[in-house]
Length: 112
Length: 112
Image 1 (tube, rainbow over the protein chains, first blue to last red):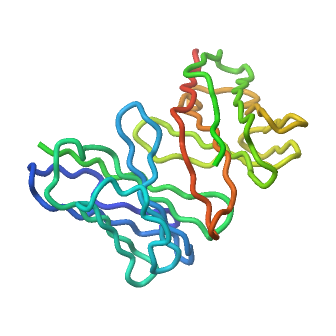
Image 2: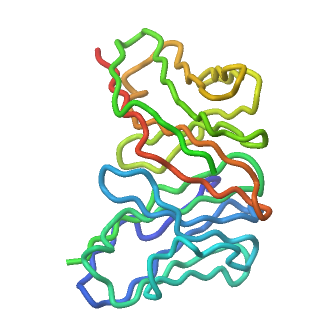
Image 3: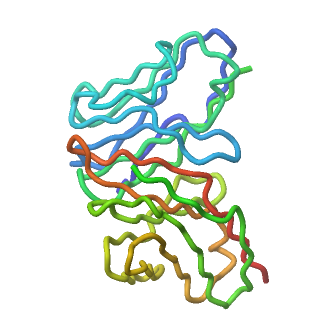
């Protein structure tokens, strides 16, 4: 497909479990962003990748959150020991480096 | 990045022009104004962006005041499908990339 793809679209997990959220950016886009969106709020920045490296991870809330992009394309957001407060929609966006961002449809994470 | 101020919500009659204001009084000279919208349960969608001059594309027009402290997004003939949350963002390139901060946005309701 031509757009940013995120899988799964929905994830329900038990408190304390580990989850991985995947993002397939648009081919050739060097910049990749992860955002988190809680109900009624705008997207909140988590982390930015330029190529394979995390250029800015200042938005990650704590050390339970980690993201990788080993080959400079697909990225995985990893959350350890999930808590109910982690429930949100996790959005991924890619960009050619300047200008507009292309967002995926998001992964709705529910921690029960 | 500079902050923006938008009304929390607006209504617009179907077929009429929707004018969405945004204040960005602390915008700096190298910051662009971007507009995105988010339809329920979808990721944000790019609409338009500009630096100084007014811009128009197939979706909307962007009017930026001469002092660049405010702007207006115009949807010339609003339809029910334009009901969404509209985000006004100002952003520049810092450290080689754009870190985007979303606010709460304006919830536009198009009324039949």
